[in-house]
Image (cartoon, rainbow, N blue to C red; front, side, top):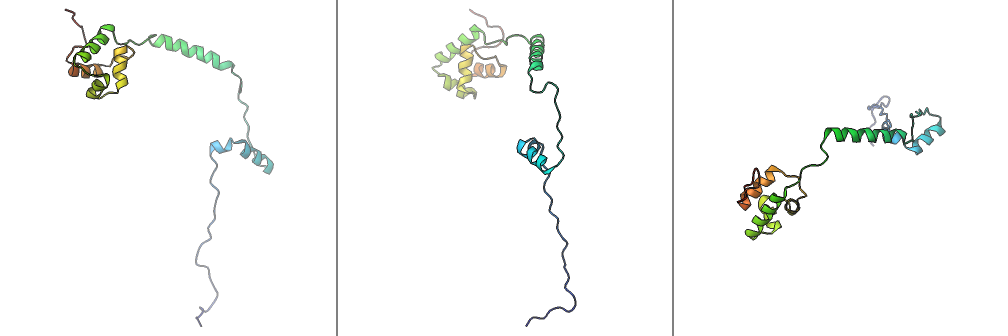
Length: 146
């Protein structure tokens, strides 16, 4: 039979108290949580926002933002000029390359080359420089027609 130690039994560990984690702000806004708190009698703070739920102030702000945008920035960004578009297309066709081939050689998407040829792209000097190297045509600066 096993031997019991003499004397009284003692606990050799400390009690552990478990706490609930604090609720997140998003959880506090949940209607279910608010209703439960009201039912249990906990304090619930409500704040009435000025013009809350009304759309009166938003229209005024939109007008001000538009005025600010118009004053600070030009109305339209410059697009690829017609002579550059034609030069890209002509040089690409002379080299018997498709738009996909050119895009692969300049390490860009096919859509980028198509936008440059259609005149929808905003000119980027790096992309134009890559196209110049691959196509062997001057695309930046003054283009002299002969």
